Image (cartoon, rainbow, N blue to C red; front, side):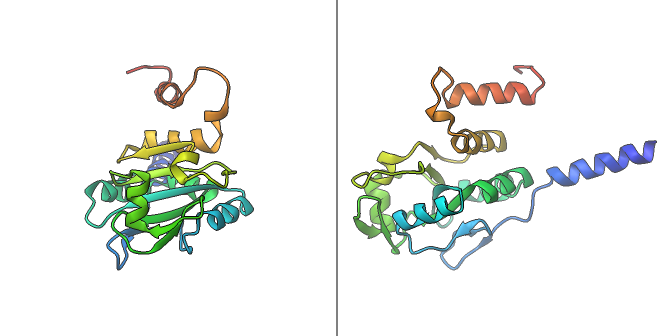
Length: 194
């Protein structure tokens, strides 16, 4: 009886244990298996995401970003979060100071760093979540259903990923993300608001 409890506890701990942290690429950015290497034409990326029945998520990072490292070492490797991203998101990484060309939904092509300026990206990491359909004249930030600037903990990150994927932003009612997140915290704490 005690052995089975210990075995169950060890199994639960292993499931909660983070996967290996992402490696750094030649550009100094963290690389994960769920990031896609694309031509960074956002219309093509959106079409490919839809073809896989996934949501398009853009993630801006920069070399030496301690908050990006925090996300890649403490949050993204968590099995539940890594699996959720892999199953539900088509992720394209952009470099805040990069020179690779990016084609926005409105057809304008700029370098990553110029696009970051155009879009007003000031912090890394910044996660930008796109809808399934984007109007032809819209830019990515105009079309985005949510933007998450900065590093957040596991619960906040998972709640944002879930809130966007379940299209809770489109529901009628008073539960915006902050209210949804507060409810999820309470549910995770078995009804406690502490």
